[in-house]
Each structure stands twice: as structure tokens, then as C-alpha cells.
Image 1 (tube, rainbow, N blue to C red):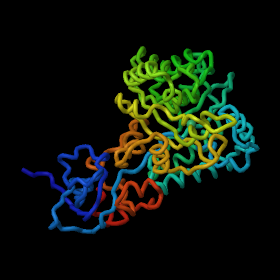
Image 2 (spheres, rainbow, N blue to C red):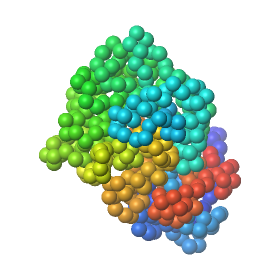
Image 3 (cartoon, rainbow, N blue to C red):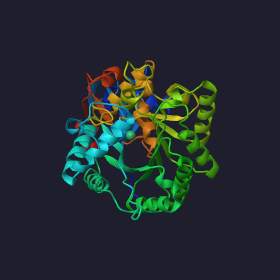
Image 4 (cartoon, rainbow, N blue to C red):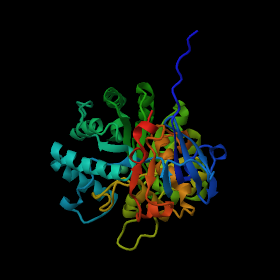
Length: 426
Ligand SMILES: [Zn+2]
């Protein structure tokens, strides 16, 4: 009887690496020795996949990496590649959220195909340099009542870039529709059908619009009909009356929607009276919503007045995490009316979040918020290091998460640039 040939296993051992324990699914069986927020040892790659971390000093090492940090790629769960890099041409000297929206709307006259392509490409190049391999960009979806399926130019340009960058960065496009337009079920269904046919995420801007509850309920309904992920800009303000995230949670629970549903901002959750906050967070957890905090734009726009801001405007990050809610950090706006500074870099965004939300060392604890947890918020599978193929992993030029997040060391190499790809790629 003939038996199928068993391919010869190929082992590669990368000596002396440090792996953040937060990016390991099963630290007990993975191996290595614990060094604060990392596991240290020799990384064994077997047949193209990460097999183990061994602390045996006598291991047969192929390449010694000198104690450098190895991580999963980063994920950017929330940015705006249609708006970025416009600040230098805006007639705008800073202001409230409403004033930023107005300034950015005036700039749309300059959104030609070439302009959009140039700015979005610059953003994608920054993300690549930052080690990001998945990004969700929001794209303004202009409401054309008599033609709800008209595809915005920016959506088309980002679609072309999505195809061009395939294999390097996975680009998700999310429509940014005013929630009051979605209160019309025929319009909501037409937009959802259009997005389902071309690939994308159904999203909306939810603030204090009187018809927001009807819009939210319609969005959950059509997302289930057309099998779409949902993404909301919600409660981007500090007024206690903003209740969008509670309405979203109730709609998701009532419909039995299983997601993924991602909610960005939720600023007033951080400053609500305690009982209301606890009740609202319990609903968010029950609904299985993910929340993405956007520190740069919140710190820049919230509590804005004539004097010094008193409130930070970040959502209730620690309380959400404590309730078991999946929380990520996103970069949001970069060098536009909503935030005049910034770079598309999840490590820099996490650094801003750690400072803004008083997240304590060891800093490796928080890496999943711009990696595996951020991916889960997008409905994307990003395996932990011990469950990963070798190809996507990154080696940084520092042993320490603090240096990586601080920006003093942000250069990465892929494992395939260190070891012959034929030996580690299946
Ligand atoms: Zn945004």
C-alpha cells in the first residue's frame, strides 16, 4: 500500500528574542522565561509557523537577534484617509467639532481623484512604515436622496488603493453617513445593498439628531439583512444628553445582532454621573460592542472653549475594560481640521492613549489595543504570536516596549528579511 509522502519539516531557531506576553495566547505552554511584560528565549519556527519559545542556552540557533522585540503586526482600527493632510490648505485656525466639520466640508471642492490618491497613499505609506497591516478608513458618504447608491469619488479611489496594496495592507472602507438619513428605511436599505455589493462596512455619524434612534435601528436591521459590519462615530461630545451608544446597544440586543459593531469616541461616557455610566457600560458589554478610543482628536476637540480645557474627553477606558468590553485605540484624524498634527502610527496612538487615560506600566499590557484586540473589533482574525505563521511577525530594533511606543525605536524588519524566506514560509 502506498502512503502519501510526508513533507520534511523545516525548523528555524531565532536566538534571543523578547515576545510581549500580552500577544501570546497560551503563555503556559509557549515556553520561555518571564521578564516583566515579555517572554524571553529562542523562537522556534517549524514548517513556517511559530512553534515554541525555548530558554535552552544550548539551542542550535540560526540567527541571534540579540534580545530584540518580536510582535504581531499593528492594526489601525479608525482613521480618515479621505481627509488627512489637508490642514495646510484649510482656512481654519482651530475650533469646535462643528467648526471642524464645516471647515472640512468646504475643503471637499479640492477632493479630486489625484488629490485623494496622493493624500491617502501618503497615509498608507505611513501605516506600512509603522508596521500596520490592517486599516479601517472611514469615507464620507454624501447623501443623495434620489440616488442613494451613488458611490463617492473618495470611495472609488480608496477601492483602487485597496487593490494596489493587497498583500501588504488590508484596507477596509467604512461609509460615514449622517444617522438622520438612515432614519428612512428605504434609503438605509439602498445604501446597505450598495455597500454589500462592492465590499465595505456600514457606518454613521451619531450625535444629537432627533431621529437618531430610528436611524440606528434601521442600520442594525439592514446590516443583518446584508451581512455587513457596523461602525459608528457616536457621542463625540461631553453633554450628558448624548445617548447614542446606549441606543446602539439596545438596538443590537433587541435584534440579537451578533456584530461586529464598533463604536468610536463615546466621549461623554468618561464624564457621566457614575450610576448612568455603570448602567450604560453594562449594556455595551451585554451587546458585545467594541469601543475605539481616539485620543488625539478627543484631546484636541473636547472641552474646547476660550480657556484651558478641564476635561480630557476620552471615553471610560478603564471601566470598559473592567467590564470585559473589547477596547482599542485609533489614530482618527491626521493633519486635518479635526486634528492638525499626527502620523498614521498605531504605536504613537497607543502612546497618546496611555498618557491620556493614565494606563500604567508595564506597557506591553496594552499592545493588544492596537493589535489583536483592534483586529477583533474589525471582525478580522489576527493570530497571537504562538498561533501565527512566521511571515507576518515583526522584529523591532529595541528590546523594550517603552522604546517602541516612545518613538525612539520604531524600525522593524520582517522575519523573511532575516532568514531565507524559503526556510520559514510554507
Ligand atoms: Zn473618526
